[in-house]
Image (cartoon, rainbow over all chains, first blue to last red; front, side, top):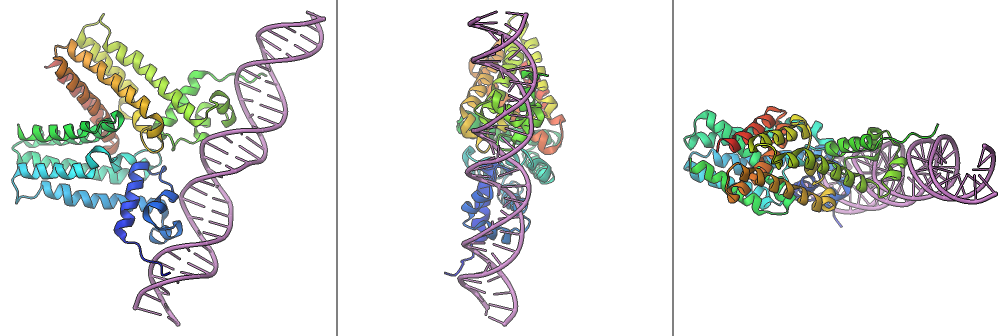
Length: 187
Length: 187
DNA sequence: TACATTTTACCGAATGTTCGGTAACAAAGA
DNA sequence: TCTTTGTTACCGAACATTCGGTAAAATGTA
């Protein structure tokens, strides 16, 4: 049988799933292999620098997704600010699978991960802040208010993911998302 | 010389430090051994059920600390509500070392940990919620408001720890703690 | 042919765990 | 008192397993 080339998308989705749910050290090559459909050695063909390169690819993959589906939406001046906000928050709900998924920043900032990915996590969070600052300004906040608000939103999203998991109650996630939307639109 | 008994406190502090910073799977027996001063086999003498029993002990240890220093303070009717709140928040600052330490709930809710410790994490968070609901009521919130507020506080504390680490900016933690205090006292 | 991709088989190192044994004490019997 | 027995605390060495990673060959494409 001819070895069929596994699609890049399937590989990335498989890697992403494992790294998000297991963290960096917790993700074993066996799991990564099973999730992608590629044997270990084939993974090393695609990612010669091994596990770290796989995690880097996941980080870039998710960064791209967020850029396209969240940030680009929030900054799309073809839409009204409130529509932009709503669509951006919908994308975030999808990103975190309604509160079931774990944030990659969290998964990779434990253990060995924190030294390896500090820079990319820092960059990713900073992008969150500036995108949400922009939507705040578009919704008539002052720049100072918008900046504070953006930080609050980031904290609340990260926090509600942990609490939702810890309490085994996904409504914590959904309610927080609605609170965020209301706090922007009612002001 | 008879082998001197290593103090339980030193052992627990060592285990706690490693499990909090590394997570469950990330914490190796070698690190746990180094941090406690006990060889691997001696750790198995103290904790016959191995790594899981060590993590259980850490969870109980921290639960006790929080009970004594946070919850007991928040509910101490010998003090005025605002003093209770301030002292409780100070204990939380100490618990998380000004934002540098990682919450044990977060560390143990990744990877294999989530199945093993789900129950204890659930219980711990529920205690947080009821203690902060009490202080809210003592500060003239309605029970409904106090319950919502308690959930917000838990989310904010968990969230600001992640964001502070991700942005490498401890002021995120301290500012959030002050926001929490203000939001209780100004209402 | 030449090249790209996947696989099998394997490696040294590290993992969590257990075994066998040692040294120091306490309790009990003489 | 001296001795014996049992218990506690600890450790070196080995356990089976899994880890991340690699070489070489098989299998595909052009």
